[in-house]
Length: 436
Ligand code: AMP
Picture (cartoon, rainbow, N blue to C red):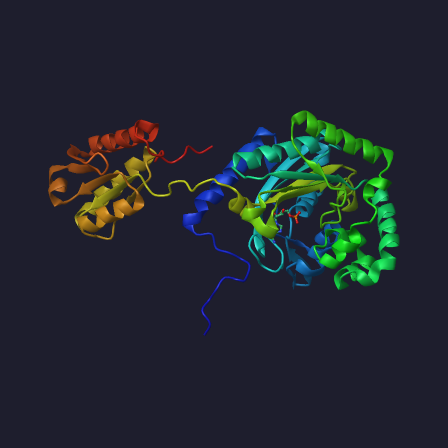
């Protein structure tokens, strides 16, 4: 029998790695709350039709990458991205009737059947957000600037913002025609995939990385030639606001991005290529002013983005927090276990992270475990301590040992650990973080 393995492109995150994930997730939640966003959690599974309508039938995601299945006659799909489900929830709960402006964020796994590579997985995680009810460009500029600040906080190097406007759906249609007119006579030089896209979704040819396509696309008209006055003004204002905020960016008139729903503002943020390789795009986002109405909701303009958490982990220099415990309670034999459990509970009530070794191991093995866990203080309960109603408190860093009555032992252990966590010594805080 083959050994059981995780599904290709879907990864375990083991406890040694989880600290970095949580640091980034917490930094993101903090940023979001500073900007007035509230968290939303939508299901991982939605009706397949939602993604087909929202993302577009001829996109790569819908054509080739969705994990779809039929369950009791209902076509369902593991969500490949977060915007469609979020927009569905916004409509379903008639949020627009309750508030004119909505800022929501989310974090969680997404599923796409792509070819796995570094920074590209089949289950990956996105940190995303959506703003409903503001047609920009003020909130577009704020969003981009916020993301640059967030990436800086994570220590991501080589941050590069690329913006574009692809106009309203009417400009997109005009551009589509202009592009087809330009590309059709050169179709034979395009890659087979792009020859097919010429019929189905010509804008996607601009996204192609195939050398044959790049050579042809170089001289193609850009959508900027076809933007109407409103689109143009929107884009100019966005640029002026980014300038005013001091957020560096570049304009790439050929940036179109993979999902069909975008209108007007589009952006991508990249990190240093050396670290990220082909997966250097950390964040993708844009405006989708038509989607809410297209899905049967009110006419509400919207903008959103998603950042790939695995890519942020590659690009960021946040380090792993200390994941052990502060104290170990060491009962030496079965008679001491009940007292040990009570002592440990008292320590935890004082917010001290602690473990009790209930295996009945020798003192030597328990001290070894204390070291492995990074515990500074060990509370030892042998037969003589039990008989006298005391505890031996061993401080492994100060190299001290005291025999103290039980309630005092807890107090002394807490005091030692709190003093250490206040930077009395040059070591990172050991106490668990306060819950927010
Ligand atoms: P998208 O939803 O395609 O606009 O992607 C937004 C961001 O999600 C990208 O910039 C990546 O950081 C991340 N991302 C997208 N697809 C994957 C994937 N297959 N594996 C890992 N990260 C991904």
